Length: 260
Image 1: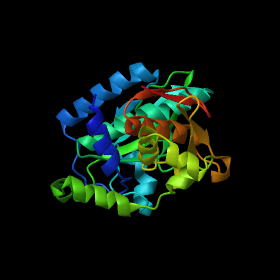
Image 2: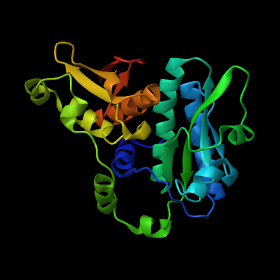
Image 3: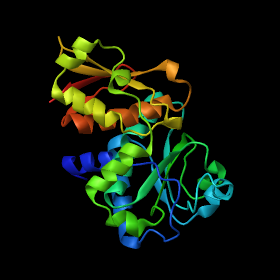
């Protein structure tokens, strides 16, 4: 698995990629991704699977221009009717996506821009499981020029790539005085979570810090609208944990983070 500093780098340069080059993912990279997925599946109690060279899964999205040359996918399979598993799916599949970012690949979380029935033909799903979501993966369009960019250039591209809610919005349950007094690890965690992908870019997760217990909590902001809120919660928690440096989350809306 990637080291902490590398995961921070991945968070700082990751963007949602909709246009891909046609060049297939090479065998060595595919093998490394599969090994990462296998390891993460054991931690997550999920059944994520890598599907390569299947543009038919994205036929409609590619034809409409919503995506371009999408052909590869991580299908996130987990138990039916299990809200916690959907949160775990966000947390752990985003870890795989960040590992792919470190290998120079582009990724995109998708809920409706893929043909689930077509994808199901290429994965193993038991009667007690269902595919939750997918992560498109591949070489970003013009990927050779992309790889030639410096880390600072990629960080700047991410900064200007899409708008994000403010730190104050991400900590809406806190006062200005509480924000100022919060420890650096909390602030760094929130800043990393601000860079997390979310359904329709709604960014529906907020964080609070309890000074008396020295814990953080993550909350689903219901006013942000419907979407894949539990999945978004898991993704945001992972980004926060990486930004904070060390610690562990409890699952669930309102789950606590204990910094170590």
